[in-house]
Image 1: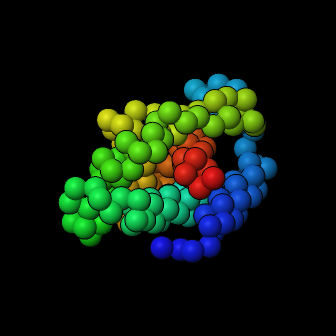
Image 2 (image 1 turned 120 degrees about the vertical axis):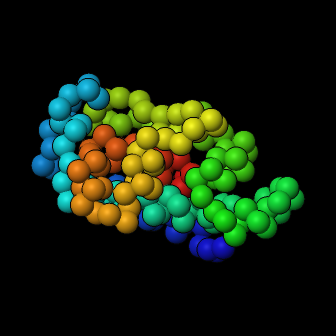
Length: 158
């Protein structure tokens, strides 16, 4: 376990700075259905890998904390970590699906972990499926997924 309690907050701030630098080149509107949210790039793909691996690392640290030592079969789950285990173990305690984030530039409220109590978020499915094939990830990752991933990182990091 990382003993520097501000580690993930600092990593979030760095990711937010990266995102704001990317946003200098994309005009965001108030409707998530506008074409600007479908824009993808190698910068966004790199952003995806950075933020989503931070989220996985944070979930790993949360699951490995003593808070879950009494959870049934926790040692097996700690040795075989994946998003389903995070959902089954962490979600009932942290209730991530109840948290929203307000995205100022698009003037919208988002729920990065919407329905996380029953399913994996779309942005995480894309990351997880294509993280080892950057060319495929480049085709599928976009600004909308980046907004949701950044919001997802903010919630447990703060």
